Image (cartoon, rainbow over all chains, first blue to last red; front, top):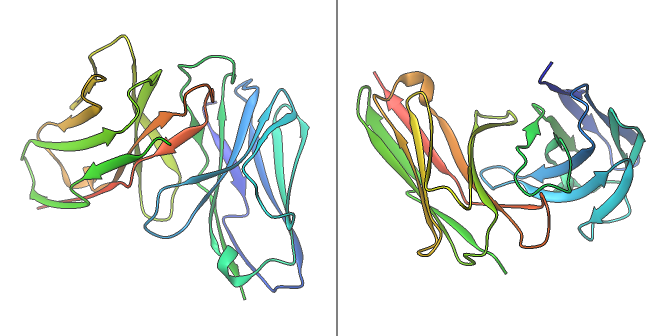
Length: 115
Length: 113
């Protein structure tokens, strides 16, 4: 199994809603990532978890709250988002962050629209 | 700060043509360089990873080269097919940042019948 699975594929939410994005991998990878991608732009790193601990937070607003319940799961909790937060949210994993020659495996993303 | 640029931004070619996509980076102290493919509204698929000690990598019709000293990489696609139509992104790790990647601006490729 070389897949990273993200749910839901599409999400529409209001600015007062609370929702969660989910990501799962069963490749035994110990590093997991959240990226945000606006239309026709490259992905931008949001968070990195290494061995279930948050290792990088790229100054992301607190309305985005990541969670890594175990080595296979990664969540992104959303609350009080703004319309400019509408984007494709990508989850990725790699075998380990310690190595410097690791391929990243990406999920197919959640297309989020904030109304 | 590492900056990664890709040219051209968009490319349209007839089927069967050989083509080259370019990637430039400003900080040559990189551990590796990866090429990804992204279909519209989808995630990224890793195509090739070139380690800093290597000069090129091949996978099927794809060949990627790396010249660290000049800050350049190229992705060569042989005998292009309509199924190759996608956006191609190169990415390099930030020095000392493990797998914290900086992505290029992307090349949107269309291969026409």
